[in-house]
Image 1 (cartoon, rainbow, N blue to C red):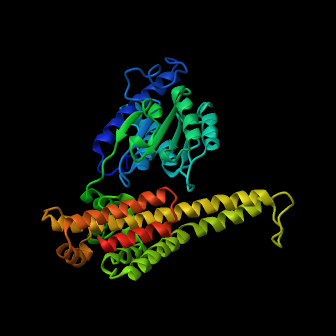
Image 2 (cartoon, rainbow, N blue to C red; image 1 turned 90 degrees about the horizontal axis):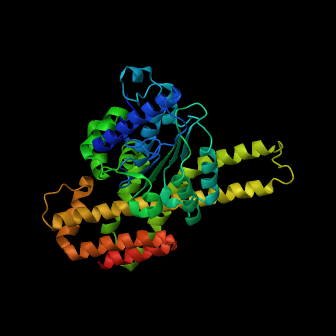
Image 3 (tube, one colour; image 1 turned 180 degrees about the vertical axis):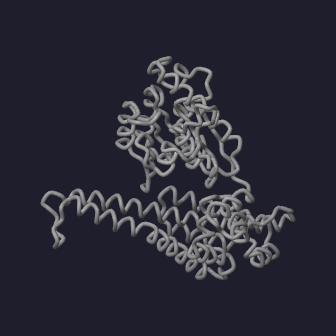
Amino acid sequence: MAVWDDLVGQDRVVEQLAAAARDADAYVTAAASGEDGDRAPGPSGLSGSAMTHAWLFTGPPGSGLATAARAFAAALQCVSPDRALGGAPGCGFCDGCHTALIGTHADVEVVRTNQLSIGADVTRDLVRRTQLSPSGGRWQVVLLEEIDRLTESAANVLLKAVEEPAPRTVWLLCAPSSDDVLPTIRSRCRHLVLRTPPVDAVADMLIRRDGIESDVAVAAARTTQGHIDRARRLATDARARTRRAAVLALPTRMEDIGDALRAAQQLVDAAGEDAKEAVEDVDARETEEMRAALGASEGGRLPRGTAGVMKDLEHRQKSRATRARRDSLDLALLDLTAFYRDVLVRQLGSQVMIANEDVRDAVERIASSTRPEQTLRRMEAVLECRRAIERNVAPLLAVEAMAVALRAG
């Protein structure tokens, strides 16, 4: 299995990354033989090469940004002996590929955050690490999965590192779009744009890799419109299917203002329960590990002077819970948007296949009883709710305003 096998529907991107990995391998091999010095990859060290020191991966949610970056990191660390015989880096089996893919390679740092933002301190630590030579691998690789969450000061720290790369250091940056990245950082990266994977390709991956039955895989891929992670969760998690069904029932349940407000409360409560399930086990494990590391007694008492450490942990956990609630609520809002998209498809008489085939009756009923301009206003109300939550409006207030607008049409 090559490292690219889980990168669904991105043939052009795979071709570019594979070419870069081949040039990177040739560069390191030449350096090891004394033909190259400590030149950094980029204009000076790899002039005219497919390889460079900073990459920006952008694309719609679910397109596989982090998967692409992680696969590239693995290919850069590939130590398969087949390379010497003309084989392409990225075999997927060697120690370099395997440890990079599972997250244990000493020279591959993957940064993802459960917090609302990534601060300058985290970025400075990364930059300091990249000044060191690879400890055992071929490249020092830093993968930032959500560069759009960098604070302004953190982005400025990163800019300096990208402007003056250390030898054999590669930055892999992921963001929803190039507009989410500082222009000065963007201009110093090679930009790869991923697309939404085809439904058939996502379904095939679920069948092949996760052992999902064909009809379930196809339904999940179509329902999530090619979003790989959401399709996998919907296909494997019965609770996720139950929550989605409750969300899609909302448009048919709001007969009056009272119904709208109750629906808003239920939606927010469901998101909260979903988020709680997602973080409570992690929180409990972190707390127990921290107490053990601080030397808590059998009675539970902590040594003097350690209360501040526990408060810092609690603060991080609260921030993670806030983000988890927002993410869960955002998924529900995306499901609502997809529902009204299907309504609009039917109203316009389009031959495009609807995504939510399992609620076709509700889609047809609303499509026949309302006008396209009403559906567009409802879709805008859902999008405005998402924007309001991003601006830190209280989720319940934002969802209540949306629910009232959905009812009014």
